[in-house]
Image (cartoon, rainbow, N blue to C red; front, side, top):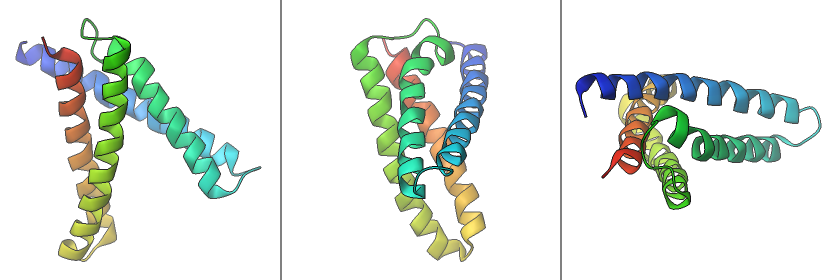
Length: 125
């Protein structure tokens, strides 16, 4: 895989991630009009996870692996990165003494980690 292909994957990943964030945010805020925040968040998060499993194999990493097991692996990796992100956030909040800085640093770490793991799962031979 060439550097251009990695760059194209990265651009598609960032665009799809932005779309996913926008859609799940909309779902969350619409849900708040009739549901408690925790339930609205859970529904939005699960739909975002489904978006990753359905959309990423075919659109973000086209030509890669797209079988059912691969989609489950990408979904599972997203859950694992979420948990790792929580741990990273708590650690960085203590180290940086700033919740804002810790959030943005965690966002950078989890975005890169999600990209690398998803790409490895869907582009492996």
